[in-house]
Length: 129
Image (cartoon, rainbow, N blue to C red; front, top):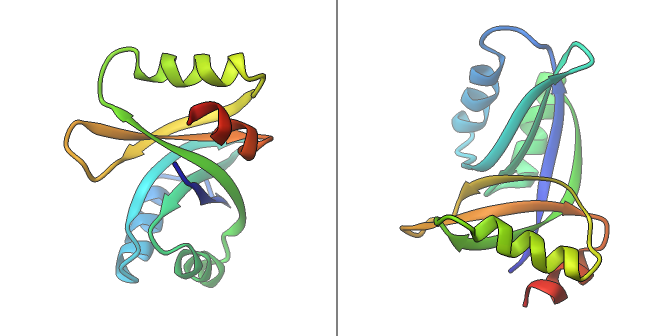
């Protein structure tokens, strides 16, 4: 269960923007493993985990998309009812608060990855062992 780099990016909120981001990353052979996209304060906001974060950062900079990098906890679980509950219960019991979470690919049949933004990654990892 690793800690992984998550990129966050602000961009224009308009039709086709997500396609433009995905195309730009794809052109540089960056694979998106997980993402969430929303509109906030009138702008587009994207969080994603990719296989080549340094390359993705350069792509974002070339397009003028403001970015930040954070560390999130990656937890691989069965793609089954109750899997998220078990992870969240263990973290709650350990006193670790989840600021936000989203799903992504796990590269294994029947599995998904949960990406958790927590304030204390070490405590989260200990709780999930």
